[in-house]
Length: 568
Image 1 (spheres, rainbow, N blue to C red):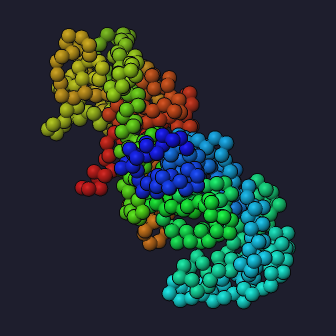
Image 2: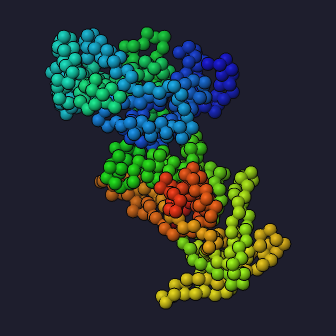
């Protein structure tokens, strides 16, 4: 660690969260020789979600702040649920958030032999035994927090018998569930986790890295702390549900540590978002049952889903910075706060362009037929360096159908018979009539324009109250928009009785075909591009989008209409 860090920490100390303060204090005390090492330990059994992002920002962020290292360690101890697809997705998501682990990628399976050797040592020391009971029988003997548990009838097996059985378990001689290896601690402990926890179980499914070499696999509580120790982790940061596990974490680590170094477990509050479920099991159900299009469905709280929807990593990280880290289990965080952070970032970086979602044709009767002008459109008023782009203007254009009313109410400042509006970046037009079909639906709006009112000309100073977005009809490109809303219709679906799938919002996805976009959008429809469709919302091209079949995901509306609707 650089010598300047101590002075820097003293200056920053008031701005540290409680986890960072613990790390700073440990550095001052010279613990672990002034070394800082964290780890992010995901299970490769699903995609990462926004809750994991909070942990990632802490694990990698703390290491960066204090000049240390953060390891990416896959907790691959259950081959029945793991897949290399998840490994690749996890890597991509962490990189998207802006973090990198360099050469420090590890797997719990890297330590299977060391863990197995430690288990054998515990058996030899009389501190572990093979139990033949079922999981249900073991659970029933655990007791309650106020009543002690009951010893297993196999607790006093000899060391020789336990060693023989454990070796045979690993050779595959017994079926899954037939036997487990348990630590022999204290069945009367006030901490339920000390009541002879299971250390190993039998699994015959081949492992994605080790194949069929192992038939016994370590449980999380046994593997995690030891893996931290083997790697040299100094601060093992996790969420509050692991507070009761910490004494067991320390108990197992004590078998390895000589006192000169030991990892320290620190817990913070997990993230809970409104209108969202964070359970991987439930998210997997949604995927497997086809209730969403996949782990990267833009309605999902997964990082891949958010990326596909058009969320920015900076917006996500800003959100996490704002909600902070505490040791108090917080109430639900409003998803609107996340959306606000993303909206702020998009406002700063998104390119402004024109798209009409529900088009109706406008003919400017006094505009010369066949004439096409080019108007200059600002790319981003928040960033002058973003420049401008050119947009064609012609006699026939499209505007939003909702921007016209034949019999408007007061204070309707859009287009109506006899009223004037400005076409953004172009002319002032006045409605002089409409065409209708046999059912009375408006098919065409007729207008006349003021030739002196074009933006940039002297006559442009004339003011009208309404400004509309538009697209030149001959130059418009057809596209499809996917409009996303909350995946669930209730604020806390995990707290509701019954099946969480019954709480899915039937209007969480609306597909709008035949929208009209200006040529500039079509020409720049790359997956990473962020657009603000003016007066409509923020959009990004979907992975499905291609030339001739443009598809855009609405990332977020321009304003938080959902929260306002809920308060009415």
